[in-house]
Length: 248
Image (cartoon, rainbow, N blue to C red; front, side, top):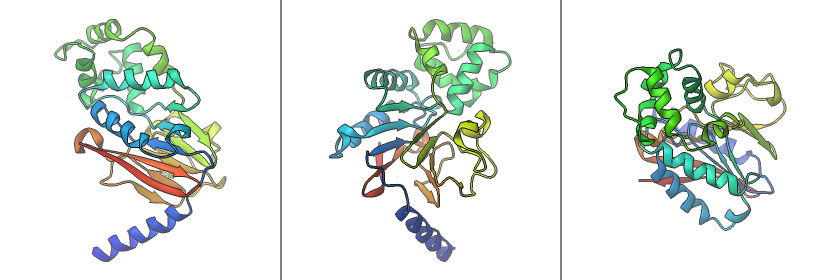
């Protein structure tokens, strides 16, 4: 078991050495899941980087649910995006999609409430004990800040730049990014472990691990922030790949 672990670490180091080296730095942040405290700590950590002022910031989706402060997370990220939409990119995750579906058809998508949605309701001041999905959706619509629902609906499902493809969950390696299904991008794909022919490195969240994961053509940065108290990000620049961490 120890030997297998050491081999896996060695493979990860070799893969990391071949990661893209973009001219303009980019920082890609994993699943936040309602941990506004960790988001703020991560923003402080990013600001400590000498090139922070020119770096792009990509949020890999699942900003909401599970953790206690989804409303604060969305408020802060929406403001950052509005201030500089070319530099700050927020992607849609499966939890943002579940929220939007719930608001559109609450009876059909009531499962969202038990997948972390009740924590989001509470963060917007909506009584978490509402059992009727229609009543809960009505209360949430009234509680959402003006323009937030359309902003969420417009979130892109991927971003591409300098050899990097950022997504929430995965991508079908056989297809160009412009032809990906929403299901693959937000929920995953069985062939995601295969290398892409176009050479893009896919940076993603969605599946939590104890530490960031690196494999040829893939970088995973979900470290289960809502539960572990550790939020991770991948920083890529002309010097290569490194990981940033915020821990509370």
